Image (tube, rainbow, N blue to C red; front, side, top):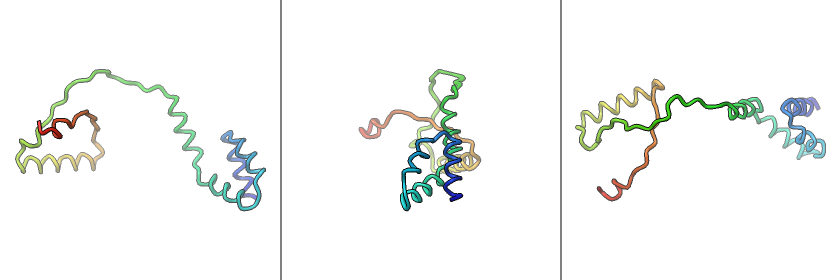
Length: 111
């Protein structure tokens, strides 16, 4: 059962002893199904993600300020197309940022 021993070694390496104990209690099909499920888990990636949760996030600036904007309704079709093209290029180059804003009442109420 090399497959079983490999799984046990990996589980022990990542301190998943409780799963090893469960494997020893299972028989036949249940054991094989659990081994197959374990083999699909990327324990290394999970540990990296977990370790990242312990890192302190450095926030360089902690202030909120208005950003400039354009009223899309006031733009010509040519300006809209130019900005759409610019946006697509920026996204393709991986040079974008995300801004989250509250709002929507104005458009729903036609204000």
